[in-house]
Length: 179
Length: 367
Image (cartoon, rainbow over all chains, first blue to last red; front, side):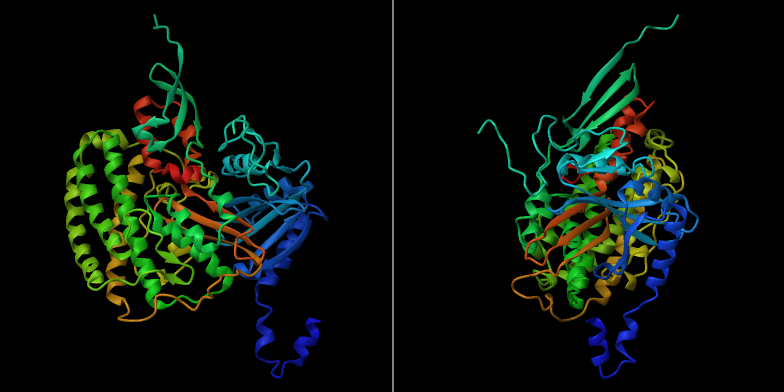
């Protein structure tokens, strides 16, 4: 489909070339590195997010989430020592956590994601890799109910301890027994 | 023979002036020394992220005002910036300048408030009055611009709501040399004071590795020698047009954080001076934006430099006029995480010094 559109363009020497920036080269290098260092099936998908300045977004196999993160932090070619943001979201068909990483020394960025089911959501905790994930994961557990295995202190952080349900889930029904 | 001591469990807060809002720390103390601590938060949790899922993008802007309520302008901006990135909008030049001017004024106002209350925390009364006098002038500028002192609701997706009234830019121009003069006075008043130095130097110290590992940002990170300012490292808006320095200290203690925030006021004045000089004489303040904003499907994360550190906005859009999921990365929440580590082995008096030096706003911690 897209091939057909490109061939129809009258001046092929101007626009379509820019469609492939330098980024995908780095994308392949990183993908290969992860396959070599972690496992053959570590990466599920690896694409640049065009809406977000071509930020490379890697969906990681949940089984290799922790080992991938460890490689991303310690490997000389990655050196992602700084975790900028941790987000969780309920996508109705499944749940997802996203870690936005950044390297202070090499000045590059990446976003890694892991998906999980909605019935018993569980993701490996990355607190042992980046300490900043600690409270962020607690917040995601509190508001979305995703359980982080290996987390040192999996408690609610925002809502009261006896709260029923996880408010940011799309099927959340507010329960207030006093009303 | 040593005196027998017993461990005591103490609740600091939630209603305690030095926690700067409704925030509680459960501390175990042995005599005067803290053995362990556990921050308890959520008293001000309003569920901004949940509420946002049922609001249009423009309707969310006033909610961002109420997160970090002493720096509402940068909160406004991060949401608008995220939506604009996702839509690929062009912002008119005049609007960009107005945004930078109000954000830098806000940074000064926020740092002045911190400076006054921090010194009040550690026992100096008069700087608080000076700081509030000068901050009030900035709030008056904002009042004139958008009719509110704290919760401005000033920015819109694609520009700003109000143009600068006549003579407003002139007032900012005059304010810069005034505050510069005041800063010299404040420096002489506080920064060399021996009691003040004894309270701050070497207290609440951490290394650059710790700061990076804990994901600290803003002055908390720069106090350890890491030169990281998103205005320089991930330039947004029109910050690449201005010349300014990023103050860095290497000690990593409360005094280093104090010096950085103090120096940042001068740097913001530099930006203001240049922005006022370059301010376009006329032009639009709103870009071409459809009446009903339908944000294309996609995902975006942007982070900007707020007075407290990196404030970020992560949006997942499904092509509707409301966000599917909206997440704010709040610097106060992330910076606070290092507190239990810093408090271990410190005395109770230093709890106030250390908590104050992190510079939290509880509305933002809890969101």
